[in-house]
Length: 111
Image (cartoon, rainbow, N blue to C red; front, side, top):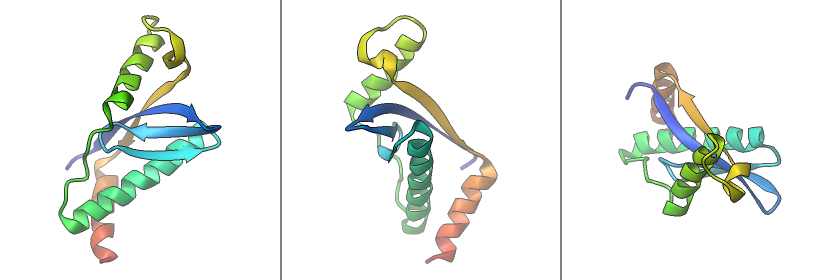
């Protein structure tokens, strides 16, 4: 695996920010967008390490409603959508090839 790029949609739920990764169906929550993204990054790294250790596939798509929220949010961002999605945000999370390699090697060190 080279570098890794995941899409995440951020939205508010029950007074918290939620960052939801579309390709892995993982979330992070926090009082701020940054805190939610930070927690999501940690969850992604933990899942990748675990999947490497167990030899499983860490990727599982988020539910269709989250995929649709990503699409609606991006349309709103370019002025083609309206409503709740206009208040959401999208981000791409990236890990370099060396970061991905480190996550894989950390999985085997902790086994």
